[in-house]
Amino acid sequence: MTDCLSAQAKKNASADSVEHAGKVRGQLHDTIIMHKTRMDSETAAGRRFDQWRQEREKELEKSIAFIKELQESEAREAEKRRKEIEQRNIPDCSICLQKMEVKDIFVLDLCGHVYHRTCIKEYIRSEVY
Image (cartoon, rainbow, N blue to C red; front, side):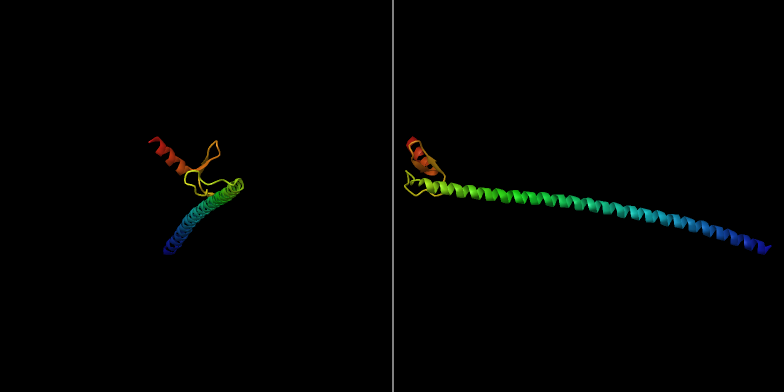
């Protein structure tokens, strides 16, 4: 009888071991799936971030190119203005009698007189008061 109990106990122990192994295997499988899902999610997030970063870099490159183009355009305009002033042979300021510079802001009246902006403001101010 003890042999029967021993055989039955072995059978039950074996069945319990198989059942336990199945549960462990299932838990391990679930854990692997969870980690794989997390890794896929992190990889997808990483890809989305990389894509976002690349888009921002492209936008930045476009902005930099636009700024450079604008600076070059402004430089061309300034050079064009300088040449126009030189070709016109603009006379000296009619108030302070100093030579007009390319960078100066000046006023040209209907008579053809040229004034520095600050000079004409001061002159008008002094005449009014």
